[in-house]
Image (cartoon, rainbow, N blue to C red; front, top):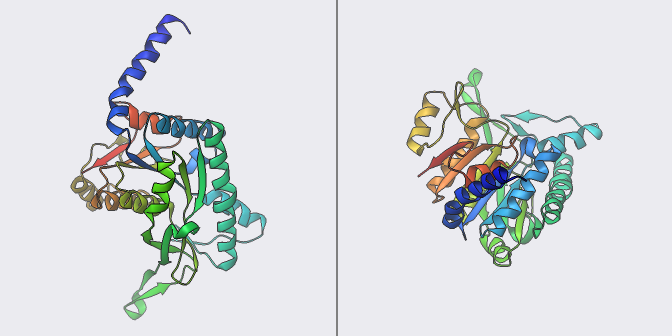
Length: 294
C-alpha cells in the first residue's frame, strides 16, 4: 500500500467513526437473502461485515431466507414448487424439506462463515426455546362468480404471533451473534414456514432495535431509474397509493413500516448484490439503499 492508499484508508475509517459511536451497543436486525446468500464473494463479504459490526460494539442479529436452496432440493426430490402470491404452498413433505434446508444446511453455512471470519455465531430455529410463536397464515382470493372470498390453504405457511426476546438477549449478552432460521412453532407444536422479512421485522420490534436492514436483489425503492431514500412512513404510504411501490417490493416496505410503527428507529432496504453492502449503508454518509425513518 502506497501513501495515497493509506491516506484514503484513514479517511474511510475517520468517516465511519461517528456512525460507530452512534450505534455502539445498539441492536441491528439484518435479513439476509437473495444473491448475497448464493454468490461466494458476497457470502464472504457479508460474514466479514457482520464480524466487524460486532467488533466495533454493535449487536447484529441475523434472520435468513433460503427460497432458492429449498427449491433446488425439492426439484432433486421430484417435487414441484407451487406459489400463491409469492408464498410457497407448504404441505407436510415440503415442510420437512424447508426445515432441513433452512434449519440445517443454510443456517449452519452462515454460522460457519461468520465463525471463519473471527466471530462467534450460533444457529437457531424459531422452534428453539419457542423463539418464534406462529399460527397458520390465511390467504383469501376473491371469487366474483359467487360474490365472495375464497380461503386458500397454503398448508404450513405461518405468520408470527410472538417472539421470545429472552433467548436473543442471552446470546447478545455473551457476545454471540444469533443466526435465525424463519421457522415458527404453533400452539399445538405445529411447524410453520414464515417469510423471513416478516420474522426480521417482528424481531426488530420486540428487541427495540435501532435498525432493520433488508437485503434484496434490487437497489432499493425505485421511482423509474431514481433510487428513493430519506423517506418518512407517510411518504412511503403516498408512494404505495401512487403505485410507485408495487409488486415484490410492496411486502418488504410493509414489513419496514410495521417495524417503524413498533418503535424501530429506521429501516433500510439495500442491494445485497454489492460487496460490503451492510457496511456501506451503516458506516458511510452516502449509503447505498433506501432509508425509511420515523
